[in-house]
Image (cartoon, rainbow, N blue to C red):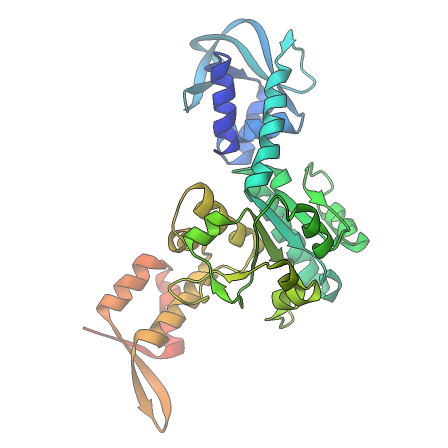
Amino acid sequence: MLLGEFLADELKKRNITDLHVDKRVLRKLVESKVDYLQWLAVLLLQGRAKICIGEDKDGDVIYERLGVRLLHGRGNVISRFYAKWKDSECITELEDIYKSLRNYVINLRKKLLFIIDLSFWNEHTEIEKKELIEQVIMCIKLIRSYLYDTCLVLTSCCEDFLQYFNKLNRNMYHEVEMTSLDLRKYLKNIIKHHRIAMLDPEGDHVLTEVDARSYTAYIIGGIIDKERVDKYGTYRLYNLYRLYELNIPRFKICLDCSTIGVPDRINRIVEIIIKCVLYRKSIRDAILEAQSKKDRIYRWYYEIQKNSKKVVKDGKVVKHLVSRDLLNKLMSLYPISDKDVSRIFRSLNVEVVD
């Protein structure tokens, strides 16, 4: 159950089906660009909003889901329950809702935990460090859209990383665990309570839906090779901390038996796992939903070179003959612009044949 769904259940247990939201809370809900109940739960956990009982007031329905309606402004729905900003006046605050949410996120963490290790932080260039911070921030925002900050842990955090993070995100409130403990020491603290797997594009095993739903903690290497080549970085991490001694398997995420076109950004990898575990999607569908434009273009190159009929001259491929059916399939599965298709065709010298 997602955090927002749990909040809906808690509200209905207290016979709260209509809830006024004040201007500041509403603004944060709109800015979040995620489900309103989900983000209201986040605001409550952060102590930036509260649920109150007050006088009956009419309002207009601005949101309705899971049997709960949010009200704002003037309308014909009357309720005495309010979601107010933290420093607003409140006759009676329902603090037990906060306590229930807090207990629930403790249980969520036991069911799905992501661990990003930053042991190789100092190997990154300045550009790569900024990119890594950006991906971590995107990861936090993504996890908040389904779970909560406490489902994310950053291990091997050095002082330089923390300074970078705080500099680039001065006003960001979060409850992500950032620890200086190295990966092995941290895992020993949780291994009794979790089934742990490492996600590695060079892993020994291909991740299946059964695998994804069998493990409760996932290790992801905090590695960016934008200006360097570090193909086996995650494997180095695995060996550095002798994770084989802890019987932790290495899984690679594949799309039809290939890692080409599978997103490599940390936040996209987390998204694939979340959608497979929480939404019961297939690995394939989760990948397709998480793909960026770049990932889809890479997949076009791979599919064309794999499935086209090649024209060879002097031992070299000089033309790729692509069937209309293959072209339609690629456009359906990996949609890109006509301009990008033309660029790929020129690069590979593609000719479409019936």
